Image: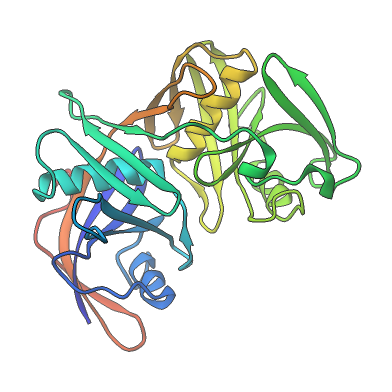
Length: 305
């Protein structure tokens, strides 16, 4: 099997982008895992597939697959990358493009400075919309802080209680504010929440260190991918959580391990916007053998060479 691909990254969150309009692609879990394999494939946090609209007049389809092979609902950094890809491929005129995702429509537009802006939609705050089932843990407690529901649960790997907010951004997120994001035990705490019955569809867990009302540091441990260098939906959930708790103004600059991402939000019932880079790393083709191992040929050199 031979496929054309574009390797892209948004603040260090890296993707294999596939054009399913100009080539026929059956995104089986085996194919996705082979493409995302960092040793025998191309390597990526997620694989993004662009498909033609189902019906005339409808938006292009944008599908997201974790590197473990499973399809997921949304990816903000991926949306910026697929938006730039679609615009540069000529699939939309002007500076904006609409997509249909598993969880509804999104809009991506290009800024004059080269950054991409994604309308992430209205954050889902009701437990059933996340989904989040607090009654699955009878010992968990809730308190209200400004406009946010803050939940407390005992975390055995941490040896103490943790507080989090639950927000749906097309996929489920738990956001934890911490004093020092670099020293906090991200993996064991995230894995504890991911296996908890209160998140029936698993959960992406964000860890946020507030610097001031307009700046913060963030790390995100994602479902099926582990910790990534950046996570757009996780940053969006952190923006919503911090704003509702009174920590943030209506625009915040987040420093992720892979780069900087900004979010803007004016509160419940309004769209949240994600602003950040989307860059092509290289373009090429990959030939996969029956064992799923690939031979890559580059059509453009990697960034920086």
